[in-house]
Every structure is written in structure tokens, then in C-alpha cells.
Image (cartoon, rainbow, N blue to C red; front, side):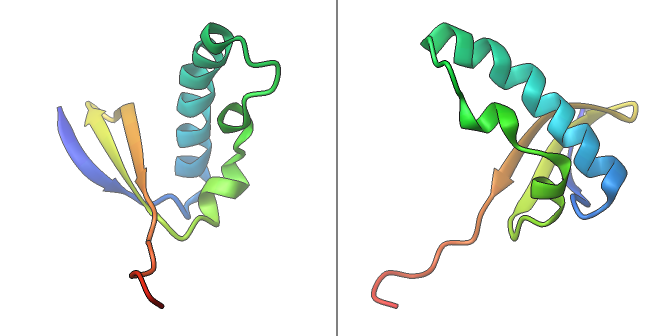
Length: 77
């Protein structure tokens, strides 16, 4: 397994990320008893246009996990 920077602006990769996130967030929302769990409704377009960076756990071309890192403005700005 390798951790790679993902090209989330690529429509195919954005769709893969969105699919993985939906699969992960659906049971999490159910466990929390949330009628509407916003992370489960993030679209591939949302991901593709995100200003953040996405890192993925990859094995043999399969996306196993993903984390998004969003830029944060320094305090006082």
C-alpha cells in the first residue's frame, strides 16, 4: 500500500473519491442516527472544485482510503 497525492480535479478520480466517501459516511450517519448527514452528500463536482489537497491510500490501483487537507488562513488575517 502507498500513500499518494490524488488529482482530485480529474473527473474520474473525483468520482472515485466521492464513491468511497459515500460508502464510508452512510454507515457513520446511520450509527449517529442522523437523518441528514452532510458529508454523505458531497459530490464529485464538490471534490473536483475543492481548494484542498487529497491524499489516498492506494494498492494495485485501488483507492482504499482518502483524506482531504484544506488550506487554513493564519490567525489574525
